[in-house]
Length: 170
Image 1: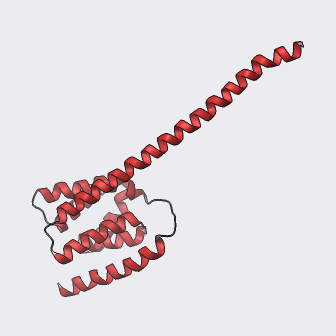
Image 2: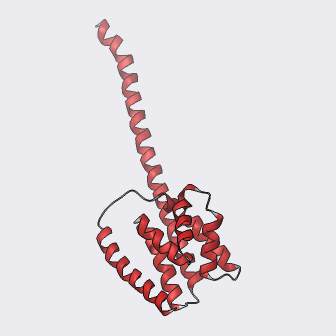
């Protein structure tokens, strides 16, 4: 058990260093990030049935193994004895800030044995949904701007069609 906790602490230290380096870089989100809120919701549902975080995580991974975005995570689970270690390995492979945050949250709660794991995951789930909602709002505003631009172009073409015969006749 001590060796496992030592490995998790080493992982957390390495993760801190990587997060500092990666935070400045903008990159395309990993496909699993789109499914992350649903994944956390499934973990929360499993935990509400009195499962440990380890069992809840394993069941959430196995129940979604057939989905494309979960395949790499399922392969990590097959390689590792622990679902927490599989999540750690997957977060390193993905190199994604949001997946690292989930991995870090699970590790910290596993190491400390906190009773607030459910609440912490619930807050993180709500944060992810709020971020997703903000992205959708921004995209919808951009669509409105593009449609207005197209409307202005069509208005310009109508003006040209109406005015050109008048100018030709003069």
